Image (cartoon, rainbow, N blue to C red):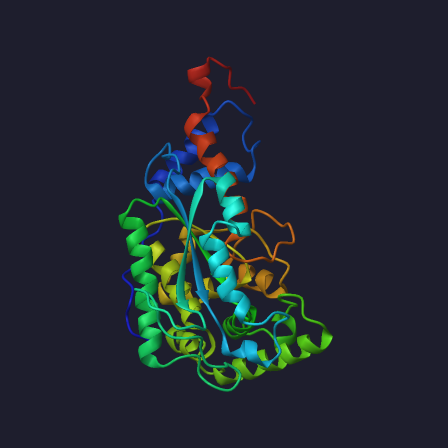
Length: 345
């Protein structure tokens, strides 16, 4: 099962990218002296198809919330009820991502895709999901709804004028499906991709490794069928997130990737919409071991490495000012000709 949900993904504008590189060479600084900030400005310029690039005025964080059946089997240090409590915390602007977004100049919204309570909403798929070590996460109809939800969320943001998107995650136990997805797509061993998540002890880690092993076994012949991998071993919120990331690329909108959970969804998104990775930059490298494996598979170098592992989109938001700096350099610095400065090697 791999329905065609997504249109083609165009590359960021290569002609504009070249113009941006030429402009960088004329700015009042030694070539390359601002390091990766220069590359960020060039990337945004190519994504926008404009040189110099427009300022990033509408940056949006969408936190995808969902619970996980596997959380009932000892893979997390916290009970599933915490997910619903954290949803309220984000809505009240009291979470870590809210505090960071306040400084970075981004808005934050949270979407309840599959938290474990009775609720309604335009993007609601189901209540929690199956325990992926022993059963499918969701049905074919539910994964289709999750994918359509992610597409609709991305389309709505872009149609309203968002010029940069960030996906965040919320849900106790979600690093377990993330590890399983990363292990499956990158063909990595369970012991390599499983970390401590919310802070589990040695026994909890062994339980988590076994769960990831069993989940990976269930999709061992499905590496090239992203929809079926999502259906069996992800969750409705992660499937929606993968679709959101893929559709952002289809809509030519840049994305900053967050930590291990978001990047696990990105692996599947790049299969759903080949070439989507060109529209993403990695905000940070988390403390979870699977994250580095996933970033390497996507050929992404993180902007920050601060040992963060909160999720919610927090690492991506922390790196957003760097992206804005890159835009400002290319947009606002004077050229040698403008400033009357001699350009000599």
